[in-house]
Amino acid sequence: MKHKKHIVIVGGGFAGLQLIKELNHSDEFRVTLVDMNNYNFFPPLLYQVAAGFMEPSAISYPFRKILRSYKNTNFRMGELKEVIPSENKLILSNGEMFYDILVMATGAETNFFGNQNVAQKAMPMKTISDALMLRNLVYTRLERATRTEDKEQRKKLLSFAIAGAGPTGVELSGIFAEMKHYILEKDYPELAKEDLGDIFLIDGQKTVLAPMSEKSQKYTEKSLLKMGVKLKLNVFVKDFVNDEVHLSDGTILDARNLIWAAGVSAKSFKGIDNEAFLGRGKRMKTDAFNKMEGFDNIYAIGDSCIMTADSNFPEGHPQLAQVAIQQARNLGKNLINNFVNPTHFSYTDKGSMAIIGRNKAVADIPKKIFLKGFFAWFIWVFVHIMSLVTFRNRLRAFYNWLGYYISKDQSYRMVLKPSDKDKN
Image 1 (cartoon, rainbow, N blue to C red):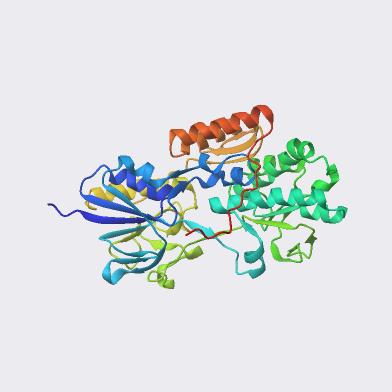
Image 2 (cartoon, rainbow, N blue to C red; image 1 turned 180 degrees about the vertical axis):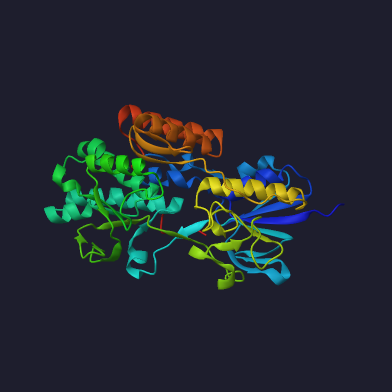
C-alpha cells in the first residue's frame, strides 16, 4: 500500500475546514483534524446567540457530520498542549499524535492586555460558551433587577459597557439597544423605562469601526447615538473594580457588566512559542507560502499567523475570515502540487461589513463603493447566511432573522445552566 503523508490540521475554523476541502481533491494524503470542541461554529454570529436572538445550533455543526463526505479525513477531539518538532509529535490533552506535515489553524483568543481584574470579571465573546454565559448573565440580571428596590442598583445591574468598537462591539451595542426598545419594556413591566440602564461603547480610537471608511464610521456613529448608545471614544478601559468601569481619562461608569471585545491575540503552544517564531499579537511568523519560519514541515494559516511577504500588507494581514479562507486555498493547492512552482499568497480584499441594527448596516466594497441602510443590511444577512457551514444552518438562521424582522421579537431568552451533579 502506498504511504500517504499524514497532515494534521489543528483547529476547525474557517481556515482548517477550507484546507480540508482543498486536500480532498488529492488521494496523496491522509488528514486528521484536531480540535478541542467536537463542533464548528460561526464566530460572526456569536453576538446573536448572546442576545438570545439565535439558538447555538443555528451557527454550529458537529465536525464528524461535516467530515462524512471527506473520505481522507478523520477527526480527533483533543486540546493541543505541546508540539515536539524534532519528533514530528503533538502532545494532546488525551494522548499523542505524529504528523508528516502540521498545519496550525488555531485562530485567536481574547487579549485582556494584562489587566487581571478585567480578565477575571469581564465577559469575553470568542466561543459558544462565552455567548451562552453572556446570555445567562443578561437575563439573570434582568430577573434580579425586578426584585431590587433600589433604583440606582437596578440601573447599575442593567447597564452594559462594551469595550471595543469594532464590528463585534457595534453589533452588540446595536442589538442591546433594540432589545431595550422592542422587548424589555414589554416583557418586564416591573421595570420603568429609566431602570433599563445605559449602553456604553468604548474604544481607544477616535471613531467606531476604525478599519472601515470614514463614511461607514460617521453613519454608524450617528445610528448608534440615535438608538441611545453612549459612545466613549479616545479612551480605554483602565480597570473594572467594585462593579464600576474605570476609563483612562478618569471617568467612572456605573455599569455592573463589562463585555470585552477590545482585542485578540493568537494562541501559542509549548514547543513553537519561542519569541523568534512569533510576531505581533503572538502570531506565528510565516513566509509567503504560509510555512512557519524556522521549520520545514509546519505551516500556519488564518488568525494564527502573520505574513509580511505580501507587498500589499507589509505589516501582516487583517484577522478576517476571508484571509483565512484564501490562505487555506492557496496552501492546499501548493501541498497537492508538492510545492512544485508554488504560488505565493496574495490577499484579495473583498470588502468589509458591519450590522448596526434592524435595517441598519454599512458595507465598504472594493473600488470605494459605500453602502448603508437597508441595502447594506440585506447584503450582510445574505453573506452571513451563505457563509454558514450547512444548508440546515442557513435555513435556521434565515428563519430566525425572518421571525425577528417581522415581529421585532425573539424567543431564545432562556437562562440555561448545566447541572452541578457529577454523573460520570
